[in-house]
Image (tube, rainbow, N blue to C red; front, side, top):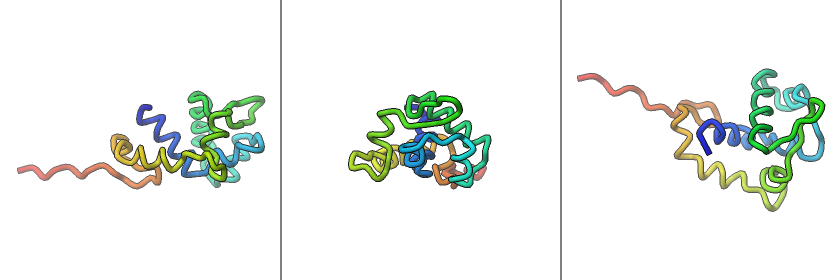
Length: 112
């Protein structure tokens, strides 16, 4: 999985997004309101997760695919979210930020 897809997955896990889309089929506006997030960025994340095969979108409503419902909903015993977070810890530095938004990029080396 490439860094952008991994960052999208980690962001969704961090926000408990798959918990929101498990038993209901919220619209992007409803997800934005529930998360208190930015509307356009939330739509981009939802559409990215749809393209990744983790959500489906029907009539503007998002719901988990079977894969996401089985492995990415935190209250379920089959949840693998922590595994993805642990696996990705070293690889997210290539994007310069962690899923929490803090910078992981190294400062430039001083010139001699």
